[in-house]
Length: 238
Image (cartoon, rainbow, N blue to C red; front, top):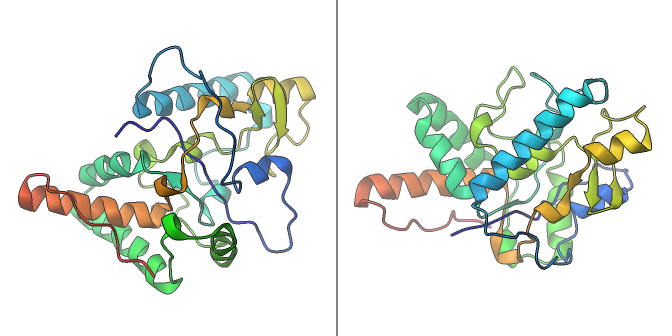
């Protein structure tokens, strides 16, 4: 299934009021923008475009970005990714050494079990918010002890753009990362802002967390190995 983007929903840190930019990652009812693309794009192309844009900002404004190896502030707390990220994660898992793959999947399942992970596709906005608050400090199952992503090449779209400011076409939305763009000019922020209109809003039926997607991806891989690509069922959630 072609999926052009995702609605991401981040856990709000305790005692922290959401900025407008952060609220975009919480809002499950973001408006749809018609006519975004002159031609259909594959999801992988959107991921490549996001990487290219982030690299351009890093090249032009290195003084405003603290992102780098070992910086993992954005790798803590659960949030929403899209269904299009599940096959990308599955491809990434398939490329890993079996021991590393098993470790990541085990971490993901432990998070699901320990925090009574709900089925996001059936949750109310209030139930989602409560769940993301409870898991605001949880490290991503793909995060190594060195603070590095063990599935970096297969990471979801939101992971590729987090750290950049956000905009909607010519309307500046705001900052996301508290470490970046702290002394940047308004012009620099606008040039570095990721355009949310480059994404396509997903419905509730397309929403997953990374741990949930990793467990599902692992089952998809297992089903493909056992039955030549038979469809795997979704992870058992609470």
